[in-house]
Image 1 (cartoon, helix red, strand yellow):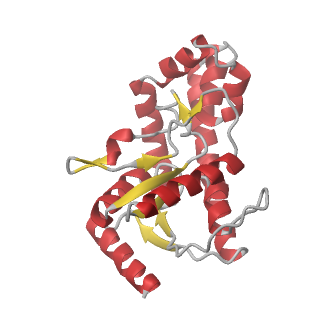
Image 2 (tube, rainbow, N blue to C red; image 1 turned 60 degrees about the horizontal axis):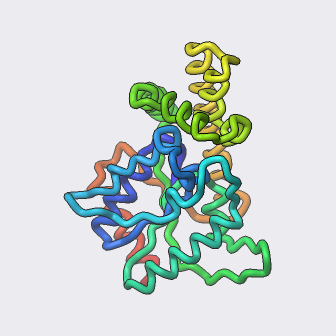
Length: 242
């Protein structure tokens, strides 16, 4: 787990490669089909050293529909049980704190009882300055990759603009631009500010998990070489299961 733009997907995929694992996505917007660039699915990251890393809970709902933590929690358990039945390790990866916490703490929405997970929680730590720089670079890259065209295509396919706006961030501001309510440069500026604010809210949630809800997070700096981070995770996991 970690704030947006810290490199979660790439690291989780590399870790899955080393530990013979499959990935369950904990991202509230990557569940939607056709919302690829704006949600940063980065599907190419799931190919490591020529091997495809299986992933779950991505592209499972139609854009424009409603999807919530209750449905995600149910999907998580189905994916989790399937992965374990294959003798592999599940790695949960994402930045939606409520989704992550809903399974760690076993939130009950309909009396469903969750098993006690033998879990190790890793947070990717990135400095505020580096995070801001990566967010800005990533936004420019997404615009260059055709994010506006992607969202225009969703509107042309009939996805209601009010629903895209409710998805927030990229989908909100680009939709407002396409509706003529924002100029292009204004859209880019407001969107960049909103993503920075979103990253701050993510970190506030993660701190709350630690400080108020008693969840231990092992933070690893993104400046640490990937190989060292993987080794550290493996060491922590061996201690956890010992």
